[in-house]
Amino acid sequence: MKNLWKLINVIIIVALLPQLSCDDREPEDTADDNYTLSLVFANPVFNSVIVGEDVVDQPNIKTHLQFKLQDETSKPVSG
Image (cartoon, rainbow, N blue to C red):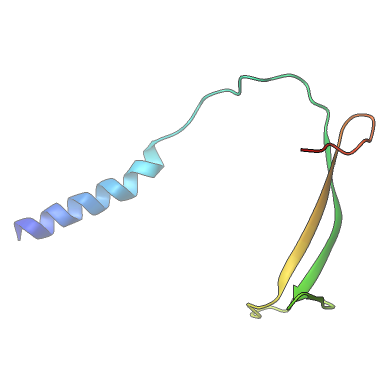
């Protein structure tokens, strides 16, 4: 019975730990970076072939997303 209570206590602690911990740190670099993130295309893919649409409950079909990150002068940001 004691082992059961120990196990229950460990489960409760492990379950509550991520809920109670939080990270309130501010980023060190707060420079105003005027970047724009835009979606270039979103294609459903099945076995490396573009298909017409995503179908619900088809685990093999994935959606390939491609984005472009641009600075304030509309030049692509690399790296």
